[in-house]
Amino acid sequence: MTPENVTGPVARHAEGPVWWPGWGGLRWVDGEAGDLLTLGTDGVTRQHIDDEYLAFARPRTNGGLVAVGARTLYLADDVDGETRAVATLHEDPHVRMNDGCCDPRGRLLAGSMAYDAAPDGGFVLRLDAELAVSTVLPRATISNGIGFSPDGRRAYYVDTATHRIDVFDVAEGELRGRRAFVSIPEEHGSPDGLTVAADGSVWVALWGGSAVHGYDATGALVQTIELPVPQVSACTFGGDDLDTLYITTSAQGLPDDHGTEAGSVFAVQPGVRGLPVTLFAG
Image (cartoon, rainbow, N blue to C red; front, side):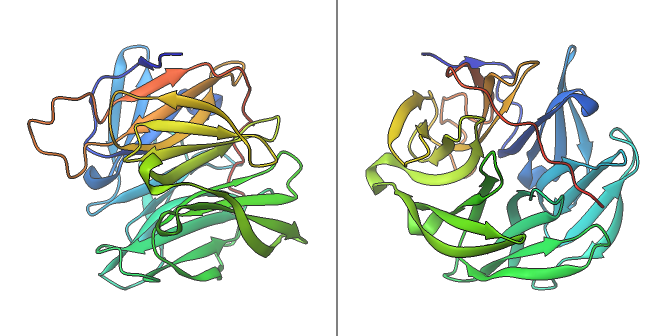
């Protein structure tokens, strides 16, 4: 199957796609621009949020959205409203936040990385509805995709430097028993953002691999979706039936004359449906 380019190269570093009907469908970030992008009937619109970096955003249960900047947490009371800074997540200028999601209890999980990708320079934080912060993982190198199984009993996690998707058991809301779920050979690219489908399969973007891989719940590779760009950053299911996989790509670090569609969002129907996004309880 051939993915369709649905936006053109509108971003330098497209990341963190999320589908939610309550904010009009598909939104994602242009990380280095600090912007939140929305795909509408009239094209792509932008909202600037963070002056340094924007990692990801999620809708809130009571309306509005939460967004994670380089070091700052933002809230908006309306999905199209102005954001306000409400918390400082860390104070290290050498580290920025990266990918994340909400767990089944509606708590925000947010990972990070050092700007120079120094080993163990990042971490994973958890924020509850009252914005209380705890540390889930004290060390990570390039913290990327996080997602949960349909029954909420397993959590999948990518630290890109490991070339693995790891899996945790979820017990009383805590992540336990980290172990390898899938190891990805370096020649296939580096695992980046991921999403989990309703059948329990795990779909991961391959940075440097020009592809998305789909693995069944046992870790067997069941599908490869090839993209016409080298740096595939993340993916999510969307559409009215959650049967379309939206895939973000990046031109980060590529020369100006790279001659590809990097920075575009692509769409394809891989034959499975996704799960509705979990909203932030705060």
